[in-house]
Amino acid sequence: MRSRPVGARMVSYVAGGCLVAIFLAIAFFLPEDIRSTVTPSQTGTLVLVLLAALAVLNGIARSSVHTEADGIHVRNGYRTRVVGWDEVEGVSYRTGAPWATLARRDGDTHMLIAIQGTDGERAAQAVRDLRAEIAAHQA
Image (cartoon, rainbow, N blue to C red):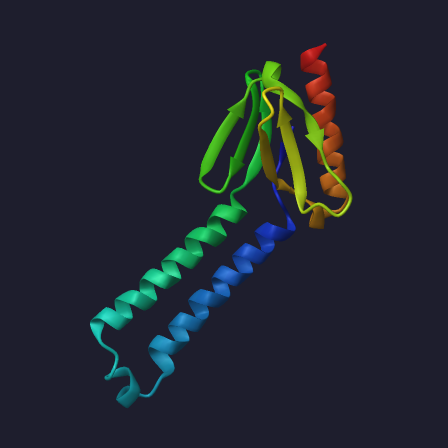
């Protein structure tokens, strides 16, 4: 089983493209007299802000949940956790929740950002598939 967000990924890519387009437009289409007043440190700050925004958007887009023999691999942004099959309590996906949640036997929970509520039936199917895999590995 593998799941990645569809809507959030599309929004991340479109927003990232728009940010790059806006920054390029500012860099190339402002009149020369205005561009000449921008200092290198201001330019550097703008580039750092752009890179930070792109890093956040990329983190959202790369979120995923997949299962392997050793357990459930949860990637939220730039951090990946592996939850062994024996550690898993279950998966909850409440109506109106932004994403599903993986519950562990020790009381910890992990947000499953890859299973977004905005993906509708696709997200519900991913939760059903994940629950079936959990049941199969714990039987």
